[in-house]
Length: 298
Image (cartoon, rainbow, N blue to C red; front, side, top):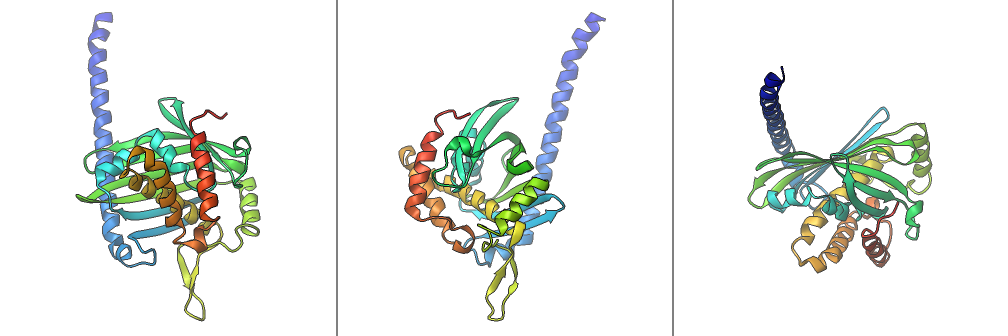
């Protein structure tokens, strides 16, 4: 029996590895086809829109779940996009850019890397008082013509849960990449109460990006409420990825400043949705928060 097992086990492991690789390849092929089909579907919206860049945003509310999707053509080669979105430390450089991100540090986790983040509101908020959200970085697919990576967090603030940031990409030509970013989470009673409190106070006059109609003067009416909120967050993450890619064009010692200024300037192009503070306040706050990433904060 021992002789049989010693002979069989290595062969079984080889077969299992082959089946796993096969399933990953099939999944990557399906992902490539789906994303390319979405690009064809959205081609006109990407060419003609109010974003001043090839960009399209969608959002959905389904029961207790919310999702925002950003589709965009990036003026960067596919290999550069893939490189920027696979390393934990680079993800922290991305996640720290939105104004309410106070901290991010990559640490070893079970089977991969975890990103310890802190999410807050005030510029002067001590990092220990910000909400801790731990994301697991989960590589999904990586190949010559398709890339997919996922950040997942089981718990968030105010009873929210099942956070996911999914990013996938396919090359369009030598210098352009089609990117899909999906941001989603689920909420319970406490989360719904907190969101409603936000929507009648600080978020009362904020809107999203989806056009809901036009007023009597022909001016656009943008979607509000929880869908508007998730569209704003998804947009901030997309702009952060774009800022990270732009920063890679300059020497390493200049990349932090390049990321910060690129993200802020891009966000300010949409002041109704994304304006939170003046430029110098943002830069001062983020320089300090980015430097703090080198220290472990529990």
